[in-house]
Amino acid sequence: MLLAGCEEVPLLTGAAEGEANRAVAALDRAGVAAHKSGAAGQWTVSVARDDVARAVTSLGDESLPRREAPGVAETYASSGLLRGVAEEALRAEHARAGEIARTLGALDGVVEARVHVAAPESDALSGDEGGARPRASVLLRCNSGEVDTAAVQRLVAGAVAGLRPDDVAVVVTRARPRDGRGGAVLATVGPFAVARSSAAGLRATLAGLIAAVAAMAGWLVWMEWRKRRVGEPEPRV
Image (tube, rainbow, N blue to C red; front, side):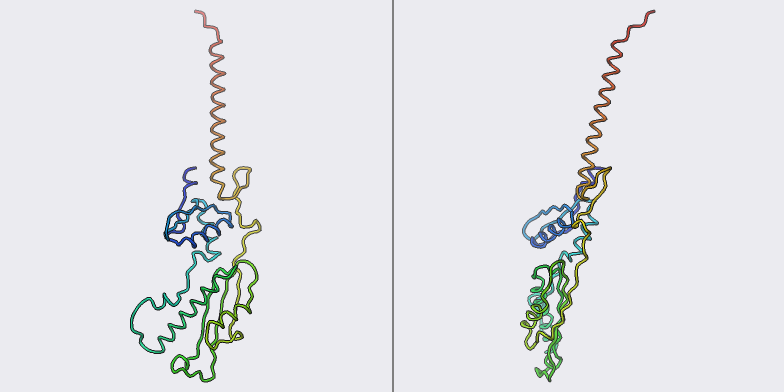
């Protein structure tokens, strides 16, 4: 039972090294011990079996592993003839939004970024704006710090031709806060309260101590019994 509690379970497999490092760091902040193994783009992050549920929740809180928004390379990866100007414009718009989301995702404290760019239909079909202006909306999910929305508006506007900073709507949400103990989850082992990731090791240590004390007590009882046995006079017939 003790060995089963200490067994490691793969939580993330086939990940890039940066993604694996982010996962290990997030689990460490949550008080979950994690082990990274592998090489060259095929990294695995493992945790103790008792910590799987907590680890999955912690990674979900930080949107890990991250699902990168498709950029230009991914959008145009499937080679083939475009069906028309409208489709080409939509694909270009989608690729542009993906590239902007990637850039915003690199900002400090940003866990996830989503970007939607709406270009005037007339521009997509004929190149004539007809008085309409492009607009964009940005959703940022952050885990710490303050986000300069004005800077985000300028960054997005600079990536889209004809887009003004005032036409960029920015919404910032916060990742689910951790508990008041800094993310560490405590488990009770007898009279002791320890981090959940250390509970299995403490149980093993306590079991070993109890077994050693029991063995010593048994040895002392046996020695006392043997001493008395030797000291008893032989019965007379």
